[in-house]
Each structure stands twice: as structure tokens, then as C-alpha cells.
Image (cartoon, rainbow, N blue to C red; front, side):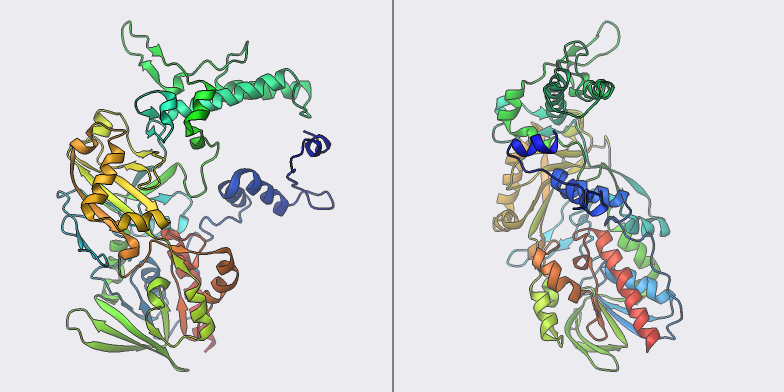
Length: 542
């Protein structure tokens, strides 16, 4: 449409030029955000080299030696491990206090015997078979999280592909019966919605029904694109289906030529409500190419432990944080003896989640405390289900990815991207957030599992039949986390976030909560890189 006709139609127009008529990056990115949401805008930012996908490829280069200055690091999650690893290279004496008996923070993997404490409930004890495991914390690494991949490469941690997108997986929803009985493959909805949409647009362009400022040659090329995009019949521009949506009977050898499947009608698709799975561009954080460490996500923490495990004091629960003009004093309770000890240092990097930190006695200023109190953490639940057969592969031919359930109580069902064609495997039956996670975690353990099995058996005949045991996680009930990840409001980002990123005397905070990659390991790593550079500048200036 021309600007004039667009305004006459009664719709607001999206401008990508500045008031003087020139196209600018800022106006272009604003338009991307208006049209395609945050994911498309972030992809555009990355194209300009200003995105938030790993601002740095590697840790900062620090000049000058520390001459033995002492840094106390609170927390052996990834931010704490990175801080100690990089600062020791520069001559700092580092010691990490970690309340858990292991490193990694929320970067955890459940195996047989693993115990996860849950407030107000019995501890969750993993009963998976030997060799089975489940990443109930971070579970995937996008290709553009270069900071995380920096350390997997540096420590020689082997990776494998994490299948984050699988059109052969199922999709269902409250109105899915509009498309008939039985599970529906995502590829069917994707192919048919794109086909019908392309058919409508192609016929409008062919009949010049749209006021599109294209030359005849450009129209012909655009039609070629739509025919290719929607798999249209070239002569009538009709969408008649495509092999990409799957076959009624698959082609094979001999005389088995296959039988084409019948596409859904457009009104069926619209009435089903499943059209919302169609998107031309992946969300920025939901890339199709992702990775996972072979053997479990905790292999990353183990890589750090091999390098700096001697610096970690485990089962050391911080009880008090103080500082003076000369240094910092940290009180902690030894988990074994119950005795309180104090450790002193020149500086402190605190990576304790703010949800926990604001309950620790600390002599922070009032403004800093107010900033911490403005930050909330996301309730989130995950549930791994051990199955005695990999029925999703054998019976349903689904290898990795997610089946989309449109069930807000439990979330989607995710299939393992490891152990292909083995006997058993772990399916992620629940991943929910916010109020739904809070409600879900209020159910008893068996009720949670039963709810997940009820959702799964709508898609898979073997879901309840082959279930053996499960591992529940409610991160907001885990006492050393009190939430899955930081959740910043727009106002908090504007006022509190900048303050928490700055040193509070000799104390600096670090972690995923001080990033725009909250909930991702890259956020914790890159936050640590920023803060150790600030600490080093302070130390050199003194």
C-alpha cells in the first residue's frame, strides 16, 4: 500500500524513517520490533553487530598484575567459577564460598541418587537408572552464545546437537478436533497454513488486487517466490498440498509410490487455533541450532572444577557480609560442623541470586537494598519422566524437539537429543512458569506426575504405559535459588538494574540477573567478565 491508501484504510502505519525522511538503524529496528516482535528485532540487532547474543567472544584482557590481592567470591555457579578462573590468571588470590556440596549453581544434572531440597516438601531424590540423566536446570546452548561455547572449547568439553525444532513432533490444543481425531504433526499445520496464505496473496498479486508498488517483472518474481514458498500449483495458483506435510502412505521400494495426504482446509486450521505455531523466523533465544554437553550440562561446571576446584569451599553458607575502607569480611556457617567462620579479602564478587542475597545480613546502602528488593524471580517447574521404552522414536518416529501441547498447566513435551535408539530415555513432561508453576508446585509429587502423564497420553499411547519414575523440580522452592531466573520489569531495568551493576564499595554483584540474557548460562558468564574488569580497574587504581 502507499502511505495515503494505508491511512485511508483506517490502520496505523509503521514508519521506518526518521522525521527528515532518512532511514536510520534505530527506526529500522523499531519497525522490525513492531512487525515481528522482540525475536525479529534482536536478529536485526545481531545483523548490525549490536545484538545481545554474546557481546564478547572471550574474557577481557586485563593489564597489570594483582600482586596477591585477595578476592572472596560468593557462590560457585558459573559467574563465580568464571570470576575465580580468570582472576587467578591475573595473580589474584581467590577463594569461593559455596553453600551446596557441588559447583555449578543452577547448572545441574539429575542422576541416580542426586538430591534436590524443596522448601515445605520432602527432598526430591533421583531414582533414574544408572546411565540416565536429566538437565533440570539449563539444558541447551544456542549457537550465538559464544561466551558459553568459549569455555566448552577451552576445557575440551565435547558437545552434541540439541534438537530444538522438529516439525515431525505433535501439536494439540483445546480446539484441535477441528482438524479431526488423533495426534497432529506440526508439519501438517505449518505446510497448510503457509500454502493457504501464499495462495491468497498470490491470487491477489496476480489479479493486481493489491496496491503493491511493483513493476510487472517484480510481480512475476514475487509470484515465483509465493509459488515456491506455499507449494502452489503454477497454473491456477492453488494450494493442493505438499509432500512436506507428510504422506498418507509413505513412498517405498518396488511399486509403493506412496499416497499423498489431504491438506486441511483454511477454515479448519483457523478454527483449530493451532495456526499460532507458524512463524517465518525463529525467536531469538529459540534457535534451531543448539548444543548440549555430552553426558549432561554439569560437565561445564566439572570443567571449571578440574581447573580451580582447590579454590572452592563447599557447604559454606554465607550468613553476613561486611566491608570497610580496607577490605571485606564474610561470615559463613560450615555445613559439616555448624560452626561460624569469617574470611577476609580485599574485594568480594557476590554471585548469590538476589532472591537469596536480600535475606542475608549485609551492610549495603539503603538505595542498593531498595534496588535488590525491586527484582523478582520467575517461579518455574520442570519434570523429567523416565520411560522404559523410547516409544516416541519407535512408534511415533519423533527424534528430539518438542510437541506443542497448548497446555498452560504443564507446558510442552520435550524429547531427549541423546541416546538415540537406546532402550530407555528421559522425556521432559513439564516446563512451566509464573503463576502456573506456583500452582503446579503446590500439588503433591504424585499429583504432578499424574497431571503430566494425562497430558502426554493425549499424544502418545505409550506415555502412561511405559512410565517408570520421575524427577520433580520447582526452582522457586529450591532454598539456594528461590526462583528459576531473574525477572526484570521495565521500570526495574531503568532504575535498579544500572545501580546493581555498579560496585557497592569493595563488593560487586554478578550473575545471570545482571544481564539481558536472564535464565541463560551466557548471561552469568558475561556478567562475570564485566565485573572482573571493573574489579581489576579498582585494584590497579588503588
